[in-house]
Length: 246
Image (tube, rainbow, N blue to C red):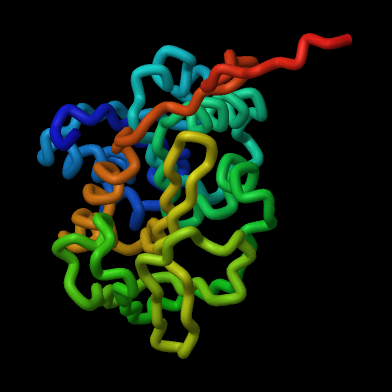
């Protein structure tokens, strides 16, 4: 499943309306920038934002979404609980979810992780080097040993998340901190990937290596290889020799 993957890029889309620097970097919004490069990869992209009806995440939109990408920051509390539950249900049914940067504090990520998802942070425009620690993982394909970002917001450990099933990337920052910046999980039938970089005042999502990671992650999260599990009451798989004596 390479091309034709149905992706919905969700962004709260608030900074782009109020901050001129963010608007100049992402004139069509962060969702527009991400949607553009995924479309160039041949993916079927839809965008959705916080202020749309049902946050743009209607039952119909989610039903036709293979992978949902989530970016949020200052308006996590405005996301309605019913929409969070709707997204969680789709993840458990098999929809992929990619959570970016400050989406670590989103209601949906915290609900799926079951922890605070808290961390240290500092925004003074430090250099970040994202090291590939699982080079054979599909999300790391074509990335090489590391990605250098000239300026980014710092996130530092301890990051209060469950132990990742797979740790793909680890970040180092100019100020000395390190951070688990590429983490995978399985929730129900759905695949979840958290990817750290992407502060709104830096052109991170225009960097080709970052775009490559996100594109790889969409393909990974969309994969439905394997059997669908069977639940509920079932007939025996073998013939049972029952003792009929009372």
